[in-house]
Length: 154
Image (cartoon, rainbow, N blue to C red; front, side, top):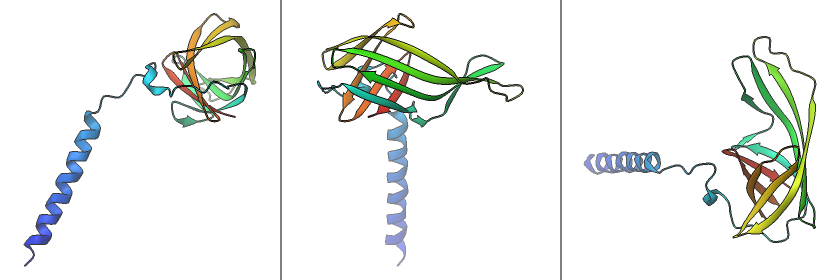
């Protein structure tokens, strides 16, 4: 009798289909929602190197317009015990038509931060005027900035 095998195969296929539908129906959180951030540790001072942008490892390339893209090759955030921070990033501009890259460019920004409701609130005072949120858990810093998730490690 092969019926039990057919029934078990049918159950396996139905289980797989149900799991696939359940995963497809789960609403993906927006990149700016705080539920992507664990409550932050309170001792956060240190140097953190960028390892991934939206889950993808460096280098990370983002199209700017039809002719150019920007490639992030490296970035480091240093958080001081005095609640200051400084960020240095190395980027290149990619010409999409030729594939040529500009020479690497170093960008520096800095600011202050505070911890409120389990999140780090970064405020840029040098190199821009933006504000963004983050959290440190163990030796990992997660930053949410303009709809993008940045992951740094100590």
